[in-house]
Image 1 (cartoon, rainbow, N blue to C red):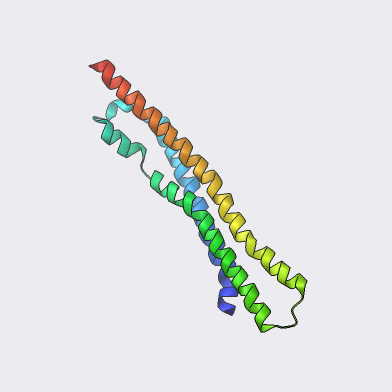
Image 2: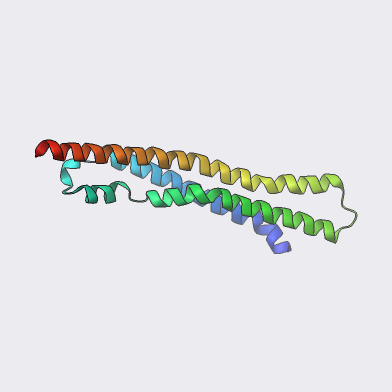
Length: 143
């Protein structure tokens, strides 16, 4: 249990940090791609859709799973607090409350990663829809 107690925050916040970094990287990369896209170079709407939705599934996965990673950290943190309470019968109420409060920071971090990631995903999907509509409109005008 001491191993888990020692490395819990490092593991959870490391994973959430990686998820946040990937979400930011994908968002910036997609925005740069959409800014430079030339619809004329695509020969079908399916190929355009594949190009414009690249990596968006990863962004969706991060946005939907970050709260669960944070919740896992919270549950394990609470488990550690209860374990410590069982090992030390004379533990003070303040120490228990401190342990529980610190365990909740993982959920807060997971939510803090998820909210902007889901917002970015929805914004990027809107841009994909706009690009697909512009492409189809250009194809219809060319006919």
